[in-house]
Image (tube, rainbow, N blue to C red):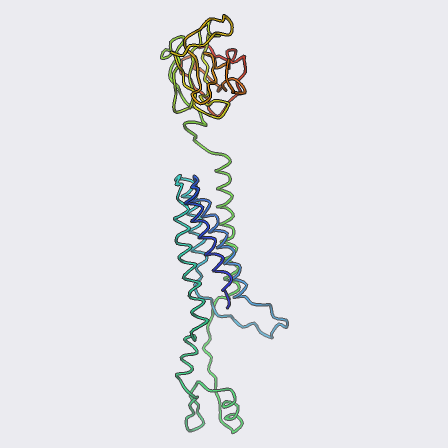
Length: 343
């Protein structure tokens, strides 16, 4: 059984991809699955090239005979589809995109495995044709109609029959040369596609929303003492007054440092001010475990290990536009208010 050990492994890999995609879908899963297809294509192409080329001859013949051109190979097509899948997975964020690759791969590998088993059980067309043709036929006059067995051909030649073998000159491309050229071209394309995916992943371009620069608005939109929630950047934009530790603008990440719950501003919540000891209305209060923070995000109570983290702020002096770099997050400290940026 020539390839019986290959296709079951591919089928098992495809089924594992399907199970993983259904249980734990991840972004850009189409790119990951297509990368596996590229590796399988290169591996299959190597095996096909070794099979077609065969072992090198120990003794070189007097003249090199042209080898028969190989039939069409489907590994380059599969390799090209894998490269296209990597590019599509980087462009479109499909969590279940791996199924687009895994389902056809499972069906194709199952069909290929079934074909291998069928060939092992049923006779080949050549064997069926030879059996139907019967024994070789001989004609009078010393002429023999092919096909003939080697022993019959030798007997006719020993009896004085003239045997002529006609060869039609053909110029064909060497199978080994064609396989080598196409393999290295495909290998280079696959490696370039994988390298491009890594570069695109490590150096993302045009990031918008959380992780990039988010424009909160202009300074005239945020009066002193205001707390404005900015969902695009997952932060609170606070305009601190002098009594609150300002003046200046502070972008507080709304994620609680304890367990990551979203911290809201609760203007009706009363808590003793640690400086005056008097109950004061208005605090950042975590709804999960009660961690409490001041206007500047300084922790005054609760299991949170530190104050609210804050993000880098830049204010355009000519337009008053406030830009917050949500990719630049600094850990919260009791001195959060000192990082407030004035217009």
